[in-house]
Amino acid sequence: MKFKHSLNVLIDNFAVTYKHLLYKLVITIIAMVLYALVITPFINAVTSSPDYVSLIDGVKEFLKHLVRGDGEIGSATEQIEKAFNALLNLIGENRGNIILGIVGLILVHTVEKFCTGLGNYAMAAIINDKMSLRANSPFFITLIKNLKEASLYNLMYAPLSVLYDVICYLGAYLLIFRLIALIPFIGLSLQIFLFITSVIMLVSVKMTFTADWLPSLIRGKMSQREAFAYTFGRKNKKTFNVLSNFIVIVLIIMAVNVAAVICTFGAGLLITIPSSYAILICFEFVNYYDREELKYFIDKNTIIKPEKERTLTREEFFRGE
Image 1 (cartoon, rainbow, N blue to C red):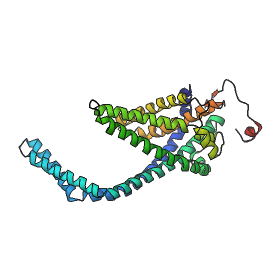
Image 2: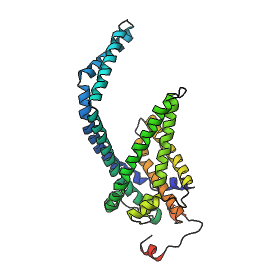
Image 3: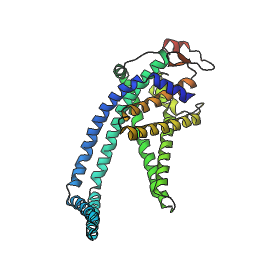
Image 4: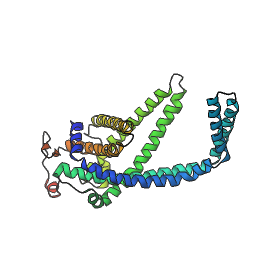
């Protein structure tokens, strides 16, 4: 039922995805410019080297001889091999610059994730207003109004999320494509399957343990410290039920986005990407409302009530909860 209610809440709040899309496009364009500034010097250094030019010429000669079917392929292959080895040596000599470039890319990604998180916070606040009060809050006013709380949240969440991603995904890559690859009967297709499966599980686990963070800040009106402790405390939170729901949602998100790439040549991503963020946020709030036994709207005519509705305390009532 949580997934069904989350889908209903998404449909009820679908207009916010267009506003989030505009915000996300601006952040993405700025991030792409910063990514280009970081990697362009290294790319220019490689592409301007004689070894790179020799490698490209060797590939062209190889293809030319291959099409003609003459016997000069061997010399072109030898040229490619020598140029490729020389290029690897060039990359090895610039290992320090490569590491700095990777660090720069990680920093840009962290800033991008922080800014994206501000938009997600605003989207979450709008969805909560609609679920609890049927209020239609404007996106950019909500973004500005919650800027302080959203910044504090993302200053904690963004670095932790990036650190988690780097450690877990790198570990999964080394385990599957390096260690498991040593097993003779393990082929590339099985390795890709295992890696994608591990990524789905890692993403779902992260979402499970951080699912209560935003709702406890926005709906629960907790402090940052209280919300942080609350989200990682798993007492009476039905962790495996939440995890299973996140696995299904992540799988659906991947399938829908891949279908958008294949069937619409990427144009559908303009809708599916912001909708992906929205469905995750909707599920987090539905899960929170259900667990805290609070009533909420899934559309203008339908209110979901818990089996045993919790009476608000005097303090909660005057805080507008």
